[in-house]
Length: 361
Image 1 (cartoon, rainbow, N blue to C red):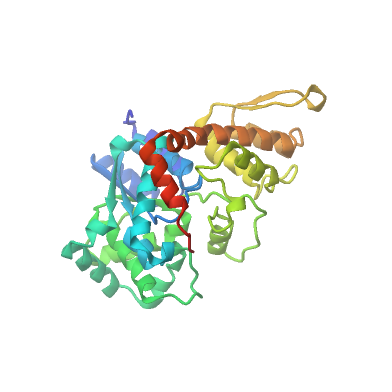
Image 2: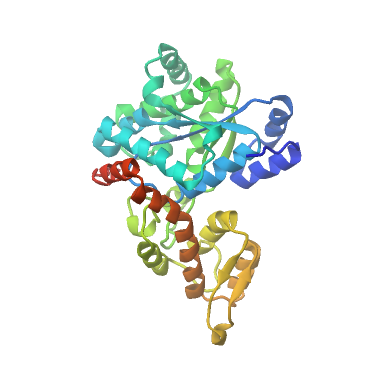
């Protein structure tokens, strides 16, 4: 993949990924001063992969690579273990990690500029635990508990001792991997800010935080009292499979889920069908074709998300016609992944093994 040289264009590309950047000024300084740039991402291997983890992550990683970054993606198997994912079965967690990597390969992630690092390997290094201890010593329990959102938990949950350790480990990962940028979702913002605070105390480089948008589930957005609640309640979740599109869903499953999705006529705010159009379809396709009978206005070819939103809000596009198009394009993106797991013997066996596991929150 060709890397963009112009700093303004690189920043513009990174801003397409980051719903929030802390801070843009520091980002400009970094791009001006350093050539070999490391972006950190990480994931808990748990259960099946949905399109927010799959397609959207591929889009974001490839954009950051084009902007000049090399990725170190942490397979957070020990973190998932600490969070009691897969019933606390580390072997199953690691199998899911392999499945996730195989999915990203099939979905088009730029593997030439991505290095997958397993937490299982980091924990064998005493120096890693020294960094974890430094983070823990310079953080209060209250401050760490405030980061519980990163694990899909809330501050009011009865956290296990291992879950208290988790944020300290994640902040340490950033320093140990020598990351310049943390490129994670908005739900990971609190621990990234903790890393910035502790990093200054410990003499580490203060990482720049590029927080991407959290793709919504297909249901009606629930009421939320705070920004944090909104992020957690609206995001796509495996715990409610009817409101998530998975990377191995069949064409029929995709159509069924999209047809049932929340999509109020003439309303753009909180509309997941428009959101998928913005963050996925128009990122991968130059235009969206809407097929409909002449009596309903005939076919449309829409060339930008802004144009789509305008037509929809004005009532010139019915939700049913939009849903039909969105289902088609999502299936086109998922089809190569589905076919890979159907046609590749090793990948198929891996997927079947993962699908046999019981998923826990």
